[in-house]
Image 1 (tube, rainbow, N blue to C red):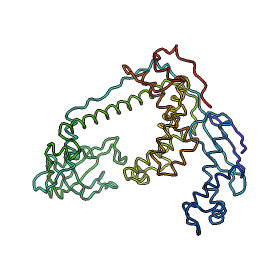
Image 2 (image 1 turned 60 degrees about the horizontal axis):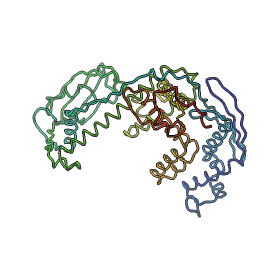
Image 3 (image 1 turned 45 degrees about the vertical axis):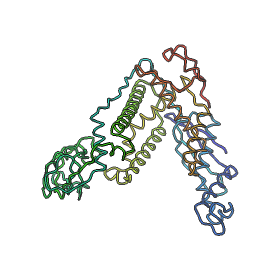
Image 4 (image 1 turned 180 degrees about the vertical axis):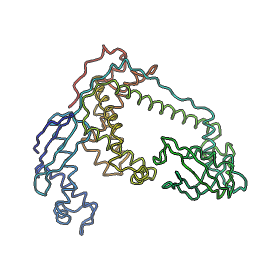
Length: 460
């Protein structure tokens, strides 16, 4: 493998890497095995066909394309290690030459770690507040649990209390039908919040056969961007009203939910709510800490590659969350009337903020000697291997060196945040979980900055 480097503006470097055929052999063999596992080759069980047979059946180019990602990942990683470059984010890869039995030539543009001047951390203070859990909230959750086991009986009278309505709904703006605003047999539970604020109040008191028109103001932050902040005319026609008969709150009901009594059930619910309140308080305070640090820190220009990498992560996070809800990304983009390019542009400001947060965390780790040891990474990897022991592809990916680096960075970020919480949160005492070389930091006065050890050089 040969390479050359060229410095670019905005803390970036371009590497031109040439990989000789002899350096690709191992990757090509693994790629051929993977291809044979997915393809039926006459005379051989899946994954057992020899390399030469796979090459003859599927072609050398197919094997090379399968191996390309692995070749690029390993050679790029080797190159930056040899150059001792402090890179951050994923590289932008541009293939210049690819052909069987020839050199592979590609360019990799990667962001270098920009310098960050941290503010005086002792001057930053944040108050951690945990919201109280009221008995009313516990009762509401109990009612929701009862509602999940409710019996529904058709009624002739008006919809009230915890009744359910089945209705046809049509929405329009200035007499123009809203795209996707027509719904047949739409179910409305009066005891639950409707996705359109104020909707339940309008249909309460209606009975079977009733028809009603009304106008509602959609909130400016409503998730349906085409309706957010607009006045929407709504027409409904009630087809049925159901009385929902909830089971009585007895110990027998509690037993159906795995608890021996109502009091035990209430205790479990309250404890879960308290844990959730603690988690939300931690999340809020972490965001506030990072926001204040980012606002007061001085940054060198942030590389475009780093911001683009964060935007890519944000896109895949959004896509994953939507898929969990059964919503394809294509449908989501149609709903908000944007394409992927526009969505990426929307992500830019938040992506830059995330990039700065990563830089701040890394700088603190460097200055405060917060390290991650090999045994900590090994422990995390072992847990992941056990969790995904039936997924060969996942287990193979874990072995990649950059995955190990990502795991190390995740652990380091957590240690940094624990250190910051102990330092910044007023009245908060924490076991920081980080180390200044070894465990002796646990007995060290966190307020005595002057006594801290001088930063060690980060491991290359």
